[in-house]
Amino acid sequence: MVQPPSPTENKEIAQLRDRLSSRLDKTRLTALQGLLDQGEAGQTVLQDALLAARDGEQLSWLAGSIYRSLSQNPDPATAAFLQTHFPSGLVPFRSAQGIDYGQLETLLVTEQYQKADAETSAKLCQLAGESAAKRKWIYFSEAAQLPIEDLQTLDQLWTVYSDGLFGFSVQREIWLSVGRVWENLWPRIGWKDGNKWTRYPGSFTWNRTAPRGHLPLSNQLRGVRVMDSLLNHPAFNPDAAPPA
Image (cartoon, rainbow, N blue to C red):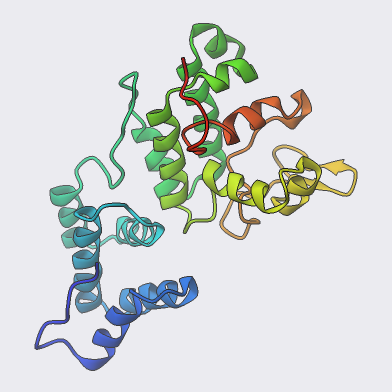
């Protein structure tokens, strides 16, 4: 929840503060940029909004966008605020195996999406076990057994730091919207154009101009079964049975 304006807040900043609560994504992003342009007063509003988001029930992509924007600000006071209130980042790491996702968070916050994709793949292999880590890819049967909390942490990192554009849950939403038809999903998320698969890495889009659901990647040349296991996983599908 965005905090109410202070009595001394000027009209323009107060309006931008209100727009942060808009139902329209574009309006919220415009308000965020507007507040960044307001200097110290605008950043104070964003800091208040970030603290309120941290104390709320669920982190939104807006909180991630604010955090990412403040993290890229060279102002020492802003850096001190983040270090004081978010010493371990914005997203809490829930892991059944005690895995630290700090490197992935750093890559996403700094918008290094290609490296973040590689780090995600490495973490999935680590979760699947020593054999998967050595071969550097996972079987569909291993994907089905991945811990719920770890997959949800990976997904939240991607969604929160991409303006809601990327993540497994986003891919699942699009997949359901095309009737679970894989051949209809690939062009929607930019993985295939006609009969041609998008070539890795040069033909993929490693920024937020990419189609929604474009990242993280899955190697479809090995078939769809890993992707099917991930998108049907109980981490994202409440009707699925939990891993044994």
